[in-house]
Length: 141
Image (cartoon, rainbow, N blue to C red; front, side, top):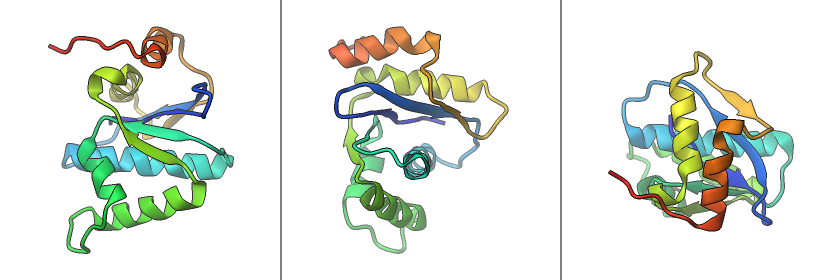
């Protein structure tokens, strides 16, 4: 599962989450990751959180009007409602600009649990977090 990276307005680590899920499409996994992040934000009453996703399609589906016949329309509508309730910001970043999300996705693939919420940044992520914050881009193969 791919995961958005979440931070507050000051760019500080807020939380991370990952888990092992099987989805029919990568778009469904991306939408679920954003939806689940918003539910965590709501549960923890966290203000001013920015969710960054490397899935431009998922971000655009959430930011625009979607017809009810879209296969993921229910999740998209629920995600829009949660985004409004939480006041969270959703933005697209390139995959090379969000190594944290890639790292969380790799951690999720290694998990047996469906959801692991991390209030403390894993040590294995610190290098990626610092590069993301500084805007350093990696070269993708």
